[in-house]
Length: 277
Image (cartoon, rainbow, N blue to C red; front, side, top):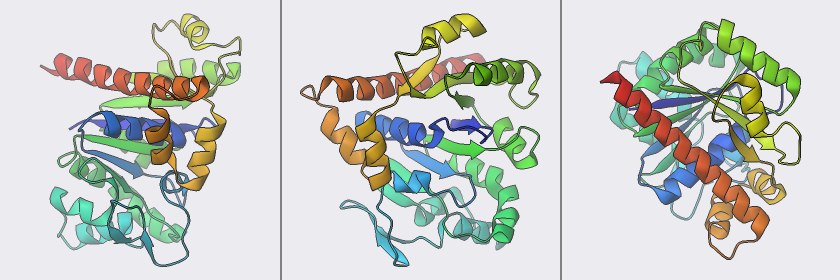
C-alpha cells in the first residue's frame, strides 16, 4: 500500500513533523484507513510528544484506548526481529504505540545510542516496505540530505514525497532547484506543503504556486492552541474538540485546512494508482 514520505533537509524549521501528525490524526478520525506514522529521525521525540506526555517509566500508559508498550522495543525491536529472520508485516503492530486501535499507530524509538541508530538506518526501507504490506497508509517523517543513502532509499520507495518548507523565499527557491536537479525526487510524485503557514504573508500558497508554476500548493497554518497541544501530547484531543461546527473560527479554519491537505493526499494517491494501471 502507499508510502507517503514527509521530507525536508532538516536545516530549517518547517513544522513537518507536527503537520504529519495533524494530517494522520485527521485522516484517522474521518476515515477508516489503517495508518502508521514512522519516525526515521535520530532521537527526535517530536512525533511522540504530539500524542503522549513524556514519562520517566520504562513503560507508558499511552492513552485510554491504547495498549501498554515497552518503548525500548519500537524500531529497535523490529530491527532485532529482522536480524533474527523473524520479521513479517503482521508483527509490526507489536512494536508500535496505538493511538486509535486498528486505525492509527506510531513506530518510533527513544534514547537510542548513535551507533545503534547507524546500524538500524539501513533497515528503514525494509521496515517501511514491510509495513506497507500491513497498513493502508504509511507516513514517514524524514530529515536529511538527498545524497544520503538512507534518505535516497526511502524516497525511492515512496509513492508520494511531500516536501515541507516555510514561506521564506530562499526556501522556495531551494525547492524549485531540488525539483529540477534532485535526482531522488526529480521524477517523483511531489506535493509542496507549507508548514507553520501565515495567511497574512505576501508569500501565500497561491502566490508561491504562481511563482513555481504549480497549480496546487498545500498549507498547514500556524495555530497557537494546536502547537501547545503538540507539546502536551494532546493532538487527538485538539482535533476531537475543534472538528465540531461550534469551534472558534480560528480553530475551525485550522482543522479544515488540515482536512483539505489530507484529502489532497488521498486524491494524489488515486491519481498515482490510476497512472500505474
